[in-house]
Length: 106
Image (cartoon, rainbow, N blue to C red):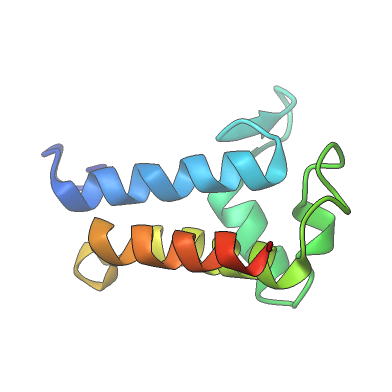
């Protein structure tokens, strides 16, 4: 959307990925101070690619979920927020993957 100013299903998918990151992290999409602020996608991605998911998990939910399901949701959020919209998953696959993450919790 930021490049074309046209809303599409794929821009909605990106937004959904942002919401997933907000849920995992317990932070708003843009957070920090006036002097230094962060976009949740770039912030989370930088930690996830280093294998550090624990530091992004909202402390209020830390330890309440299995790590493999948290990784699954983080992977879904990453897939939803890739730069090229054509590479993002469709909602059918996202729902399927989220259901798999929920099944990991049982």
